Image (cartoon, rainbow, N blue to C red; front, side, top):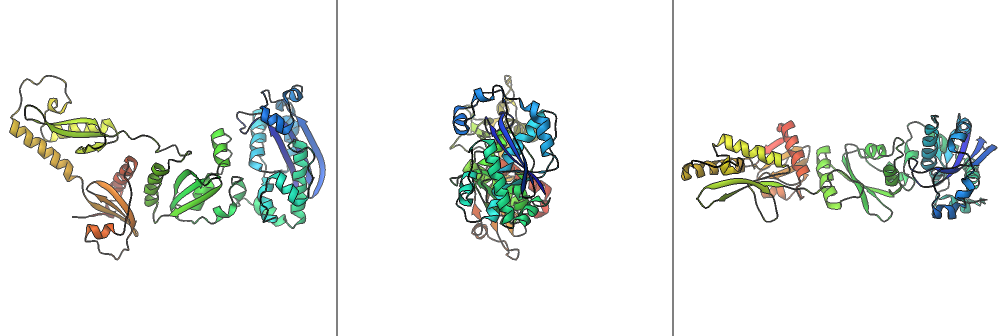
Length: 437
């Protein structure tokens, strides 16, 4: 096998926004080093002071260096037909691939990560960053945090991996079906392997154990791995991958149950990397009151705490549609429902009109049914039109008393997303709905 061991220095962490200031490539024919290439690169943007202090590469040093476009053809030539190797390979590969692409070259080559290989071949080390790893292995780095020195040290790590009978590890990682090398550098591989192939909810956590993302899955292992496929080089994605240090999960009996639990957990934990479902829910309600003339009135207003409308909605348009339906079906007057701003010339009979309003209210309340959604052993309870909770009830259990059902369930808070999911599910699968008197 022929390797190209690569190390780069950059002006920052994201290929779309930052430039390469130095690149080094150590060519290996199996275990033997057969060539070296290194050059400074002019990134055409300032090098941040903390990076300049760490690497020793200053703006003055790169001012007369070639732009990446001028060395791209040479770099592309050196990488062709070789396996791209780096310490935390996704970082180096994403930069090199992006900047080659900007110069008109398409890099398509297998890649290997010496961090992940070292964890397998040299287990038990406290850390696997290049500095810690080389100290453990007795490798001396010349010019630390410079591309040439770090690339040569990484090449020596590759030699020791192979001497330690790590060839099978290399072959395993190169197999198309082996996707573990694409995992974020701080995420232990075993945690991904331990994920079950069942429905559930998963939690990505940062270095302090704080949940930063919640997701649901039909197959937990497959869905989690899918987060790391592809080569999205955006700042948002790279920042997300670097912040993942561990995964936990909760198995659910069905995908529908996982969807409900995901919504509950996003609202509860408010993870920084979740974008959907994280918005303030302004609810609208249809309220009723008696005016000074003795008429029962229906009106739409914003829902606030400690008020109980006869119906609530997440969208104002939905509230208007419902109120217009009541006007049509129960012969209510649009003016008395604040849907028409014109002046009422002739008022209807008070008693007759109020009876119509009460019929409309009764009809809405009759729609707030109590029922159970049953999938396999999973049961979701809707009590008087509101989501109560869910849990497992054996198929052989005969459903009779509501309180007895509740004893098997975990109560969860309702939100508009959950209401929508339940409504859609009931429409699609009416056979799975059990009415409870």
